[in-house]
Length: 343
Image (cartoon, rainbow, N blue to C red; front, side, top):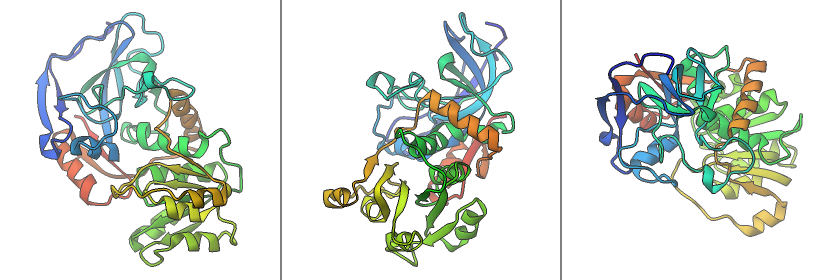
């Protein structure tokens, strides 16, 4: 220990499937960090779609009873346990969603995750393994940095984690305007790609262009958006699709021969089957990126720092209003991340 911890800290707890109303706030004495552990005073946490899946009981990985939810957060190192060498009190840090996944391919031993089988970041003080921690880019606020661990790293993995990555001048299509999609748009642009974005709302079209989208397709107006994607690529199709909508058929119809589809999820909750004939017809690769490793997080932060990228924030809620933040995230269709700040 190299600092004095507060006598009481507040944390939210929830059980999988209990719904947003199941979030409960309680105060407790903090645990001192043990060997290789770090106490982080959390300044901000950020909601991703996985948090809704947790409270709905639909998350694909185990969730322990009474877990402190939310995988994404950023804060300041308050104290370190014995043997800690990578950080010291006062450092600004975030944490990898999979604390044990430092580098290389994902393995079963790396699956314990913050806000699921491990306590997460919707707390005033988080005890985390030092190996999980990632420095915050200097130009970002805590609120901005809190948005990175899930959505941004997933977008980075989707764009670069297949071993080939993006070549300058290639075309990337991102579906919708959720957190992963917006990060994918921003990151793809700085990596030299042409970006096509889809949306169902006219009021978001210009905002997507302002972020760098070269083309925007409104799929309310053009339900067969794959046809429009082929039209704006002179019939060739796009090199890479970041599919957050769970629309593999249209993604396969829009992708170029030997293209790549990152199937990130399905915000609609529907999981249509993949037509193998379409898959073979374009000889495409379909991959489901599972967020990413600490090494990928660090590489992404280097690019974010070099290009001074800033995450898009939609709305910030105080810690005491965390349930309201969940409800807003669930119902409002936010453009950018919903963040919760601690006092």
